Structures are given as C-alpha cells and as structure tokens.
Length: 126
Image 1 (tube, rainbow, N blue to C red):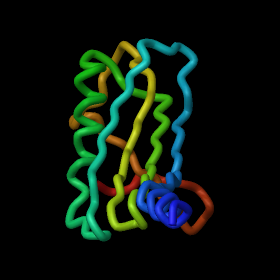
Image 2: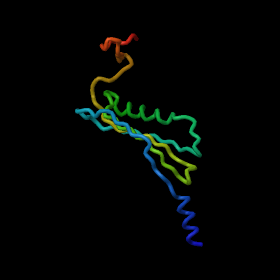
Image 3: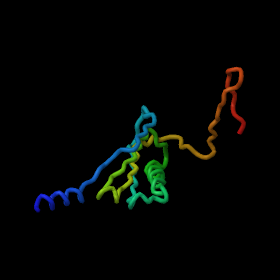
Image 4: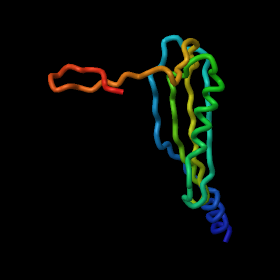
C-alpha cells in the first residue's frame, strides 16, 4: 500500500526539461555590458494560441542597451513538462553583450545582392 502511494506521488511530481533550440551570433571583440532577458508561458494540454510572450525578450534587451547594439546573442528555447505532460512551460532566454556605439535604425539600408548569369554580383533593385 505504501509503495503504491509513493509510486503515485512520484508520478504526479515528475517532470522533464528539454532544450529545443540554441542559437549564437558572432561574439564581439569589444564586449560591453552583459545583458539578459527571459520570458516564459504556461501551457495547458498543448493549447498555445500565440507566441506574443517572445516579443518581450527583444524589448527587454533594447531597454538594457539603449545607446548601443546587442551582439554575441545566445538564445535558448526550453520546454519544462509537469504532471504527465498535461501542464508545461515554454521559456525563451537571450544573453548577449551591449556594444556602445552606432545603433541600428530603420534608415540603415541593407543592400541585398544576387548572383547574375555571368558569375558576378550586382546590387538588387529595391
């Protein structure tokens, strides 16, 4: 009887953590202040209707580095499963370095290039 109760308690309290994805951008030579942001959401029975909680990570990183650029960004996506996979938590973590200097803005134009037939490259039409 006691063994059955212990087994039931262990099943109810069991959980599992898995790392879904990891991404790393190039780490700058001149590392400034270290910045970190995290966001998470509880999910019931797999019903997740939006991923808006992820947007707060970007906003939080921008507020920690108002006069620079965040680079050397390490992002992790984790799932923490509780109670027989009925409840789980999705967590996004981002860690990087605030590099003081020129900030990226909407007026900065990124020139896209495409290959041409003769093997040379020319600027794409915007």
